[in-house]
Structure formats: C-alpha cells, structure tokens
Length: 72
Image (cartoon, rainbow, N blue to C red; front, side, top):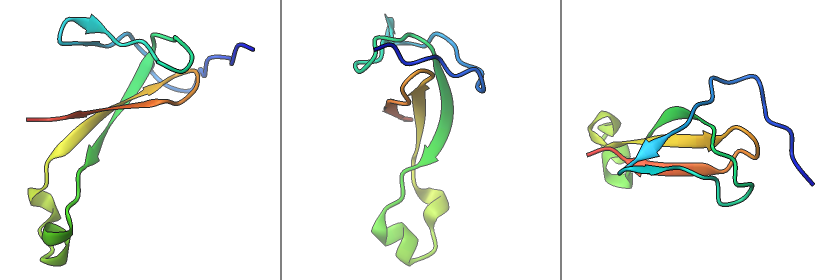
C-alpha cells in the first residue's frame, strides 16, 4: 500500500556526504527539516541547555521517518 505524500511542508531532496537520502521505510526521497537540541542531564540540571549541540532532522514527507545528523 502506498502512503500519500504530505503537501503541507517544503519537502526537498537531501544530499549528505555525497549520498541522496532515501527513506528506509517507504523509499521516498523528499524530506523537510528541523533543528533539535541534544539535551544532556548535566547541562539541564545547571540550566545550561544552550551549551548542548544541535542536530538536524530530516523527516520523510511521506511516512515521517526521521534521520538525525549531529552538527559539529
């Protein structure tokens, strides 16, 4: 069964390290992105969450599978 593509996001092709991302669940090749903070217990305990690294998430526009890439 094919799941319909969602039209409510700005989905696009994503290339990482020279490879085009392909969703491992539905084989779709269009993703939308968001930033996520990688919180740690220690930083949160001391109210220093702003020191934590961020990750870029690429979410499949068809099935919502999420790829995580840590920013360096």
